Amino acid sequence: MSEFTERVRAFEHRLQAHMGEIFCPVHLSLGHEGIADDLHRLLTPQDWLFSTHRNHHHYFAKGGTEEKLWDEIMGAPSGLNGGFAGSQSISDDVLHFHASAIVGGLVGTATGTALALQLDSSNAIVVCCVGDAGTKQGVFWESLNFAVLHCLPIAYIVENNGMSVDARLGERQFAGISGRVAAFGLSVRDTVDGALECARMGLPAFHEAQVTLECNHIDMASMLKK
Image 1 (tube, rainbow, N blue to C red):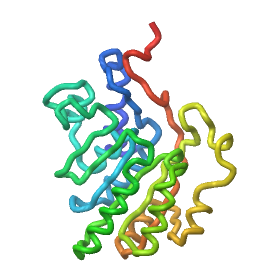
Image 2 (image 1 turned 30 degrees about the vertical axis):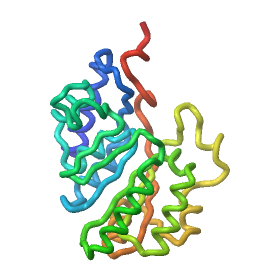
Image 3 (image 1 turned 90 degrees about the horizontal axis):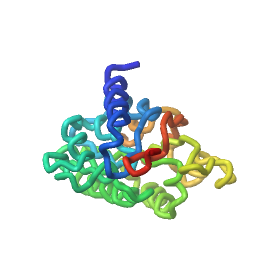
Image 4 (image 1 turned 30 degrees about the horizontal axis):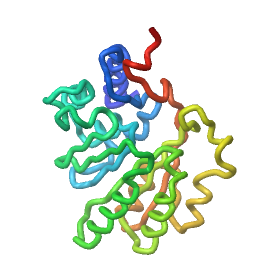
């Protein structure tokens, strides 16, 4: 286990221990750290990272600080977004990092950002992380199509933990994700490294990571058993 992964897990376990003090919805990333470990190693300060409601590991991958995120989740004015974003919708303009509580909510924004970078002749790329449930949104597939048509510098990363709250993937989807993505003409890669390598060549790419969530789907003080 890398030092980065240990740091992320320690932060999430600390949140678990203080869940009774947290009054915003929290989606811990325990079990998802491997993707963030790769992104932490591969992303540059100029690159953009768009995330989901389960975003703590992604924020740290982009260079985020534990103190700012902790204070934000606790609703403190000293938090990353003044205590207003909570856990799900954190944002850091300096780090080029944005997350959203809406499932698939930033896929279109990420794709538009990749277009802007292309028009500016930038060397930066965009990484858009979504969960498997995010692929159920129409904007996901529309964005893939747009990215291919315009050869955008973007990598779409799906963290597939096989669950949407309590609904298993096989109960709500008849086919796998990667095969359908390949039909759109994206380069489907086996690793995060490969997907980001493609994006840096100006080719939209996709990687599906099979992960196992090691905690509840969501937690907060009001959900704890009395």
